[in-house]
Length: 616
Image 1 (cartoon, helix red, strand yellow):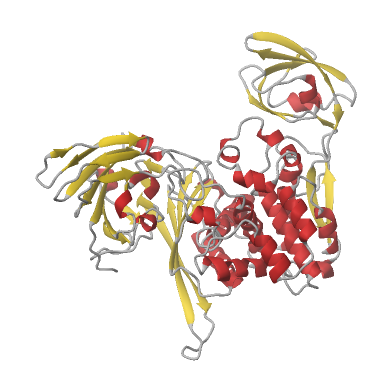
Image 2 (tube, rainbow, N blue to C red; image 1 turned 90 degrees about the horizontal axis):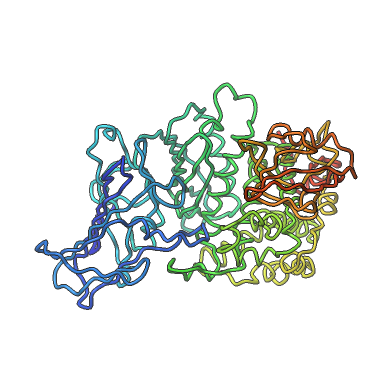
């Protein structure tokens, strides 16, 4: 608990559940004689898209110490100008908060969640000044049992989970602690980590206090979740082999019927997840797919505590969040994290190697089905995240590649290359530790060639050609050959159906390919995506077409592929679509199914030990 005084004081209250609004008061106790500029960020770290949070400010006004109104002039979409004043100034504003996501703000009758980037105006002249935040408990009957979940430092007499006063060292610190208010369950657990001894300190330990916060209602096996998360977090601590950078960490989880999302912060993460995919006590004897995905999400976001929150590209380190911050390095920070999130499940014995290879097969399947990998490099994908990855349209499958997915596969290949080239004395773990020790821990941003520098210069490994091809070209990665050298065989097969995500062998598969994704319509189906160089694409099928029939037989979302797969390859089929209120008849030639679905099997258990741990 800190005794904290500040010249900048925010007071926040949920003013209307039905109207989804937050009222914020900003008091500037010692205003500048030259006036102030107030601004709200245009984007939030971890989500590389301009979101213009200031558009949700619906009212704003200012007054002096005598409660007399002051003029406040808007300069641009996110900036306001305050005049000079000799005494304290109070700015009052209202924020509309109805975005159920981890990126913005959301006011609801069960809980309210908000990020500082959506709610706290920055004072340009005082971004480094310490701040005080007072959270007011809503005076509504349905809010009488609400509590607060945040990792903002406590101020004055406030206790964890109480409404009251919190503080931050500066504005950037303030906006990196999301806040949840509402009814929720707390699942606590601790992780104790040995600390390297010194001449003055022997056998020291570091204890990190964790809380899994579950808001929105659930029926899950919280004891199992705490036990599994404890193993995962301990693994990440051990990975970096250093005193952990956090002493208290929250997994702030908003539960809904079907949503998914995660966003990392310095000492917490905000998660959005389906309550039905959490484990029940009746599932204690197996690992449900939905729960495995939840653990992978937690693993991913917690790893970001080091890898992007502290170790980060120099371009992101210098950003003021007012405009885009371009970097070709996102493949390192999201791709490596996407590799380790699932790998850590088997390393920590939360799952086994069979489960991990299944998930890895699904990742490889996603890349295999992404024709955009032949057009865009992973570094270009990183650089263009602002306009392409985060603003995907129907053509994305053909034109862009995910720096998450391809970055993860590059991380896999790099890990295996390093292990083989060093005679199994080094691995990607050493790269992660170097990044932390030389950059994250020292608060030094990483240059664009940091991975090349570590691998080629620090490790002295002959992997220049691999890195050049993987990062700066669209050549295929030699995944199959690398896996084979570590006792794993890569298999390709056609899809079973439209819902097939890969990772497993299949007793039956499609014999033909169609090439378009679709969803149900009142009549027929609505085409949502068309992949290049497929029968649907070559026939001229377009996104937005309402596909009505094949050879005059009416189709639906349930039967389209069943009917289509009855045709033999090379058969010509008449496809009837409704396009812009006109019927069109297209000629489609059926083709053989693509081998675009991947699964992995162990061919040499002894070689596998050079990469994966022995399973329970």
